Image (cartoon, rainbow, N blue to C red; front, side):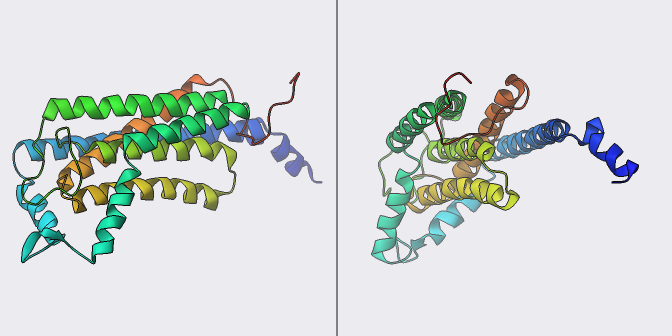
Length: 252
């Protein structure tokens, strides 16, 4: 092997530890950009809603999802309404709390207590943020069409959109530590985002949220999930070991 090759391989900047540290720094910068971008969109939507600028857009989308002849009749065959009701459950507190408990116990059982704690704290704090935002804005629910799901709180931002984004994106970010292949990492994040998008769309379809409520919820939830990931990454020393599905060996 030539001396330049030896020098390249032995260079401190080319060691696995150096590459891992560089990757972590790059991930942190991406996290900062995502947080700033999402919170900027959330703030713009909040201002637009408070000024009534989204009214025409919101009403047009809600009407488009109902029969023009009867706004009580949602778009599509009757089975589609049942599908949307099933999808909206994926963003409900009962389902997400159950998911959090099952995952936390499972992760703790394989020696990944830090990942379990991260997911539980992120979901709990994200739920609190969603409820505080609702109380602050106190926007009325849509009254343009019949509600196809029960509601108990104010409309802006959508808690289903916010909390589902927090939960599924936080779970995706936690699972990334167990995956090295870039294509599969993209798939994991895309799946988390898609689940939240479906939940948000179902809320508009069911007539219980304006589209602007859901958009704001997605942005707030994404910002919070990534912020929690960033704080956790900053607090963990060195390069943590990837998540393993095998229990930690005694004495390690």
